[in-house]
View 1: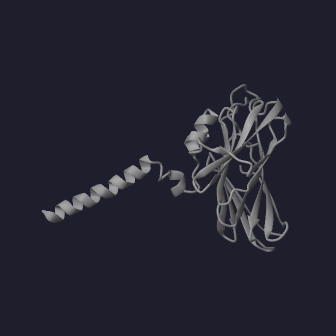
View 2: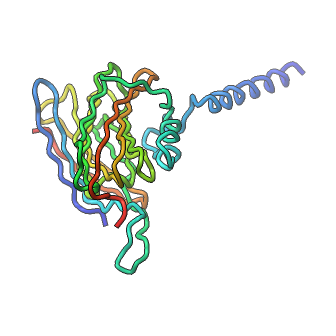
View 3: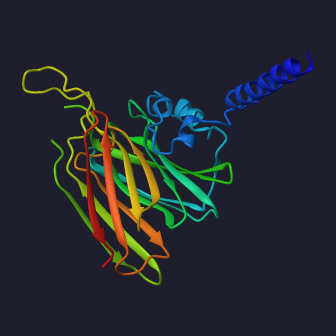
Length: 156
Length: 104
């Protein structure tokens, strides 16, 4: 009797912990499989939802995140974005373009040996705020800039 | 068909290296129409991986809103001339490509 009860309890508590951790968002699939594409975040259709999917909805504006982007982009198909983070322990940088159909453009995770820096060309459909979001020690820091687009770069 | 890639990695000041990489890829948004007037399906790089001496240092996730023929610049710390680099990508159709090189 006792043995059966023990086994049952053990099983129940183990699955319970895993379920609770999943529910709390502690065991995000992309954390386990680093090289997995974060479908939920990339398919979010508003900047607010993208930030929520990234866990960054409470990101604080920070001067430690340096976002370089042109004030005016003549060609929305190629807008150079350069981001570096001076926040110690920065683990990732995400780029969100508020008014694009799918605002999250890219996200980079940095392991030891890489500096939290990235430069990438992105497409912008129209004039929009661009946000660079850095994650360090479970907290999120954001820098925002408006880029005016003369010719959009998403459609034909 | 995955197109060619180009990579250039050079030492900056101290032990920091800058890596620049170019990938040939259409990065279709799914919003663009082809000559037949039909929408061209989404086709874009999802994963970009940078390895330094065999160890992953950067895991990138990208979307259709990265420009066509993507160009990236990254910076590595604690690197030196001759260190080996491997950069690879994987797209939403399962196509992939990679390039090997060394820091100059």
